[in-house]
Image 1: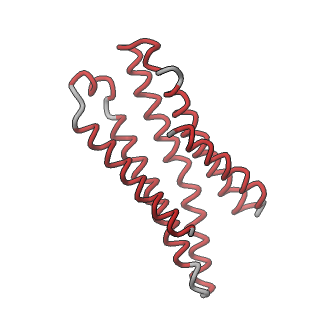
Image 2 (image 1 turned 60 degrees about the horizontal axis):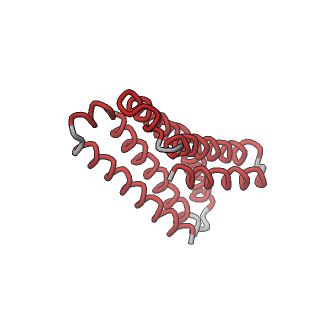
Length: 162
C-alpha cells in the first residue's frame, strides 16, 4: 500500500512540476516581470521532491526482499530522502514568498489573497521542517513516537500549502 501511495505522490509531484513549468512558459510580459524566475524554482523544487518520492518507491519495493544488505540500503535511501526534503520544500516556500513579495509592488496587499499565499508559504516550511525532524529523530535517536508526530505535522503542512 505504501508503495502505491509513494508512486502516486511521485507522479503528482511531477505533474505539479510540469504544470509550473508550463505556466512559466505562458506568462504574459507583466506576469513574467512579477514572477521572475521563481515559478521555475517552484518547478525545480517539486521535481526534486518527486525524485525523493521515487526513492521512497524504491525503498518500499526493496523491503519485500529479505536480504539484509538491500534492507540496509533501503533504510539509507529512505533517510536521505527525508533529509533532502527540507531544502526542497523550503526552496519552494521561498519561491512562493518571492512571487508574493514581487506581486505586492503591483497589487499591494491584495497580492496576499486573503492570507492564502501566506498559508502556502508557512505550509511549505512546516512540511519540509517536519519531514527533516522526522528523519533526524529516526536516524539519530530512533524516537518513533516523535517521528510519527512530525509526519502528522508534515501532512498538515502539505494540506496548508495545497
